[in-house]
Image (cartoon, rainbow, N blue to C red; front, side, top):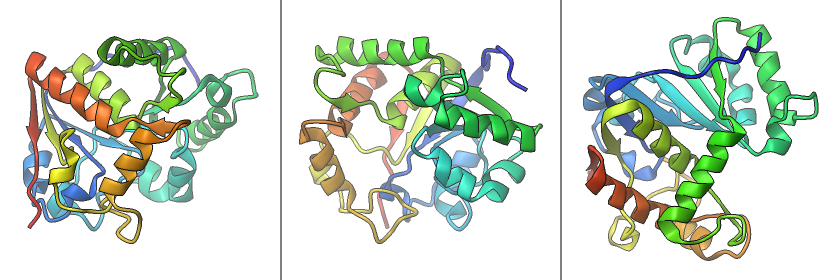
Length: 235
């Protein structure tokens, strides 16, 4: 079931679709679907939101914390999405392959149940590489500052590895306070607002995502790589 194969993919044009509430009313679905590869994150659904986010999913980058959410809806994510490649990431304690990795064990069961499923697990080397990128860009040690990298950060690094050109949808810049107040996720309308979530995480002492810092890093990358931020204006 489990073999040591590396994800070796090249796309000329990728659409990275944010899970942000900024996608609501974007009407970007057709444009996203015309991209060579479409990359989504965690459990962000397309069903019911096709007009704004499109229908195709070439890659789905999934955090260890979101695996149970996908398992809750196995039919939708794993049976109907046979052409999607999944990339899972998580800390060593959850992903260890000696029988003790709680999330890795779940993924093994999925691989048995859905033998056609394309699944990859991010290596610890790659996760450490992403940590070093964060440190190089910010001058701060991620562990010491009590920060967790977001799925978006891993997704952007993956996209830069495999795409010649990247169009990012619905990911606001680091000047987040100028944007309309929308839900943190487009598919969870009753939940906390994006603005409040970003502020809380940026300044929390332990265990926060540094969303605002990460957005500033993406803005810098956009000047160095072929990355276009298709900031979508809500209607």
